[in-house]
Every structure is written in C-alpha cells, then in structure tokens.
Image 1 (cartoon, one colour):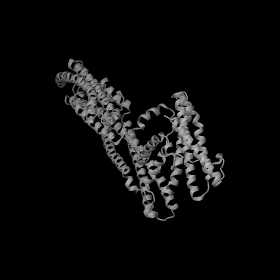
Image 2 (cartoon, rainbow over the protein chains, first blue to last red; image 1 turned 30 degrees about the vertical axis):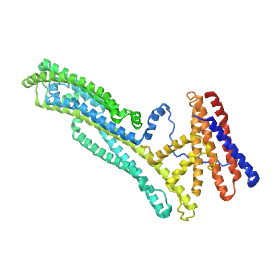
Image 3 (cartoon, rainbow over the protein chains, first blue to last red; image 1 turned 180 degrees about the vertical axis):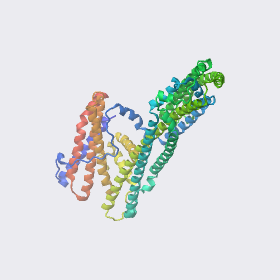
Image 4 (cartoon, each protein chain N blue to C red; image 1 turned 45 degrees about the vertical axis):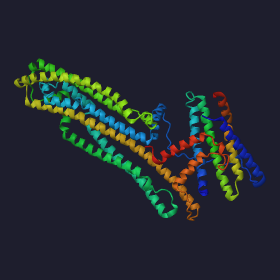
Length: 484
Length: 105
C-alpha cells in the first residue's frame, strides 16, 4: 500500500534539495524567504464531476457496482451485446415452442369463450367472474389512467427531445467557436478541430432523437386506439349495478347455468387463467434474469484467453433452458385443460343454441366487454413499456449530458491554455506551438514524473506514481470521451 | 515547449491540490461520520495520501516559481518557502508511516 522506504527516500531528497537551495540562496541569490503562512495557496482544480454524498450510504454500494461499467473494455462490451442478442434469440426461439397467453386467448375466442359462458352466468346481473376482471381494470385506474399515461408520455417525449436538442446546440456552439478561433489564429490554432472529435456525440444524439421519434409514433398509435375504443373503456368504468343494467336482454338460463358442461367449463377457464398467469411470470423471470445477468467478469476472461465466447454462451444457456423448462409443465397442464374445454364446450354450445337462455345481442355485448378487457390490459402494458422506454432514454440522455459537459469543460480548458500560449508567444507564429496531444502528454508526463526536480533524482519516483498515472489516464479518458 | 510547460506546471499543482481536497473530504468522512466502520489502517492511508498530494502541489508550485526565476531572476526565496511547505507536509505524516509500518507489517 505505502512503501516506507520510498517515502523516506522522497523525504530525504526533499530535505537535501531544500538544503542545496538554501545554500545557493545564501551564497548567490540572497533572496528574502517569505514566511510560509503568507504564501498564496495553490488553487485547486478538479477535472471530474462532483457527486454529492447521498443520505443513504448503502446506495453508494449499489452505485459502486455500476460505477466501473464505463471502464469495461470495448471488446468486452461488444461481446456482451452479442451474447445478449444471441441469448435473446435463443429464449424467443424456445418460447415459440410453447403456447403463450395470446395464443390461448385466440384459441378460446375461436370457441366463443368465455363470452358465451357469460351469456349464461350473467343473466340479470354481471357474473362474479366477469366483474372480477372489470374491477381489476377499475382498480388500475380505468380509462382516465390511460389518458393520464398518454398525456405523461407526450410531455416526457417533448421534454426529452428538447433536452437532447439543447445538448446538440451546446456542442454546435463549441464547434462554431472552435472554427472561429481557428480562422482567427490560423496555423497557431494547433488543436484537433471539434468537428473531428464530436462526431461520436452527434451519433449518440441522432440515435436518441430517432428513437424518440419512433416512440412518438408509437404513442400516437396507442392514443388513436384508446380514442377509438373510448366508448367501451367508459363502460368498463361503470359500477356492477350500472353495468348489469346495460345487459341488452334479461334471460332465464338457470337450467343451462347449472348444467354439468357449463360448470366444468367455468372450472376449466379458471384453471387456464391460472396457467396463463404462471406462464407470464416465468417469461418475465427469464427476461429479467437476462437483463440482470452480470457477465462482465466472464467475458474479461475471454480477453485473457482463459475461455471463449462460445463456451460462455453454452454454459449460460443451461440456466435459461432450466427456466424455460418450467413452461413445458405449464404447457402440459394447458393441453389437458384444452381437451376438457373442447369436449365440454361442444355440449355447452349445443345446449346454449337450443335453449331460450341464448340471445344474440347479449352474446355480442359480452364478447365486446371481454375483448375490451383484453384490449385495456394490452394498452396499459404498452403504455408501461413506453414509460420504461422514456425512463431508460432519460438515463441515456443524462449520461450523454454528463459526457458532453465534461467534453465541453475539457475543450474549454484546452482552448484557454492555447489562447494564453498564443498571446504569450506574442503572435510570433512559432511553429513549435504544442498541439493538443502535446498538452495531454505534458500532463501525463508531469504526473508520471512527480519528483522534486524533473532534471534530477529520477530514482526517487515512488512506484505509487505509476498507479496514479494509470488512474489519471482513466479519469482523463472518461473526461474526454464520456463514460459510455 | 518551455512556455507551455510553465502553464502545465501550474495546472499540475492545481490538480494535485484538487486531489488533496478529495482525499481530505474522504479522510474527514472516515474519521467523522464513518469512524465506527472504517478501520485505522484506512484512516492512516487517507491521511498519508492527502499530505502526499499536498507536498506534490507545493513542489509543482516551487517548479513554477523556479521557471519564472530563470527568466526574471526573482522569487528564489519564494521557491524555497514552497519547498519548505512540501517538506512540512511530508513530515506531518512521516511519523504515521513509521507507525503503520511498525504496526501492520
């Protein structure tokens, strides 16, 4: 950690140099040595963004896990992206082997279920089964919630577009200033033109704006769909009594309601709903595992030639196969229930058609309600995905903004130094003006040669300085090229 | 390059002072709010590192003044005073270094 010998050597060298300087001063220069207390203090310069210490220090530990993400080598980032893409394809391919929620709904719809069952179960009043679905929607906030969500998404989109454009303008202003200075100082303006450095930032901005534009189109489509179906969404906001009054014809279907096929069908539909919920949970868990999968350490080993990308993929594949296997159990259950539904539904539909309990208007009414319950949940899911997109996008813009601020600060500092140099050179057109790279090297060499006098005593450089040099380079690369 | 080096020497001094301040904040946090969960070795380490950077900051200030002295012939005494501050900074933590070397090695 700290080498005592190096520190001692450093201390001795300082004292020795101080002694030599004192002797020189006493013999030759005879300069007055001011009191240490009256010396002006060196100004501090911190070239990294300051972060306030949070109230909850545990959050520091959480952020510490991601704080070094930016230091992941580019090759590893590329490998991780490729891994996630391939794993995603593998999961989707495996999921396609099983019947998912939408396919089950489509299958039931083809069998006139569950609305035809509702014609029987909701005679004078909405059945408990249907009411549970409707009250779930009401608890989620109904159509007003959709409207608020849509309005929030619209505002969020506008806000993010504005923030991105502001960032773009700040980069453009710096670029224009650089061009102006380049014209003013001609050949003495030796640093790299902004246009050659800021293209990566512009690319990030373009990508964000493109995604925001696509998101806006998506929001528009959801909005028009919500508007088209508003009438039904408003019906879903009614109370149980009010909704029951909307049933077109009050029928008497007690006989068929209590028949064996109807009771069994109700039981099967309940069972299939449970399986659907389980299957959604498994799918969500699988994708959540993929998103949270921390595989940086594994891919760093690829760089050290200890393993290969393919080996890591194969190793992790097993984990997802095990997760997806849970779906096969659910799928088996669904298949058994479907056979039962098919058998009972044939008898039930026959009885229903021949019974006075059947009414075409009622059938359409319940079909619409069921369809709009599904549609509501779909729209809500889409809006939640939209909000998640804007949250992610906001984080990306925040990262971009920090990168741009640090880039602008670094360029500004570089500009001031270069102008000072040009002015102090008296406009002599000195061709030895250091370039921006020379400026960088100067800083780095300065740090790596932290010793008393750069012309002597090189052997007193503590080895710690090498680490400081490395750390400094890392900080500087973040400073100049952003964290992502 | 010589003209340029002058500005960068000052910049290095300022950067070292910045790092000194960062270590000071960390040290204050360690001995104040986090004193129960930070071990003694870390507190020593932070204290030594902050004075290490303080001395570097003063050495670079000294270098800057020597550069000016080379041109104008003035300020040699001031450079000695800055070097004195660098020595003082090292001396402040020297006893800590000896102590932790004795205690932890």
